[in-house]
Image (cartoon, rainbow, N blue to C red; front, side):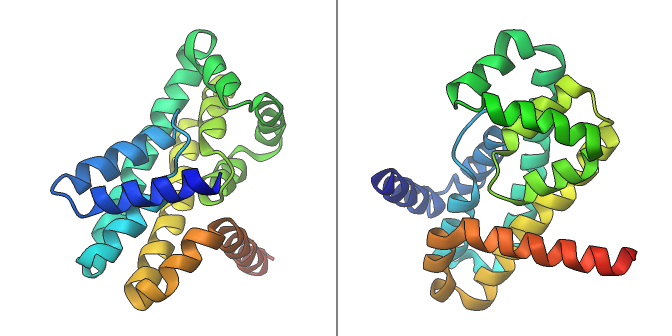
Length: 195
């Protein structure tokens, strides 16, 4: 797994410095939200480290927007093509058990389920496909996706703008830990505000 991660990091750095970096970032952000296993964070980090940190807001927003569009595509697959395509995606990544749990989360609170999945390293594609199957409210889905994905990618972009190379290695290595920690902080703040 470590070798795959390093190869992915090398690929991201090569494409981050190329003339088509926006295309690759857009494509990866879109695909990861509906069917592809590799998150766009690695390419976003690579782009921002290749002398693009001053444009962190643009690249973070591009990643967010394309990820939300990809989420809508995942929703469409779940809503219309689950039997033909969606089920195979779930099987391909061995996410059947997670898919069933997601259905339960949607019964409890669809907005928060999507928000948490959009923000954390939980496979977001499972939630987008399940959202279509469950036919959750499309506006709530888009809003939760935009907030969760936006918070995730804007936080990464801002940290890279401020700390650059110093934090990049830490983000690559401990991304899951930091995203869960930030999620806990966001939930605590929301709890304090709402109560």
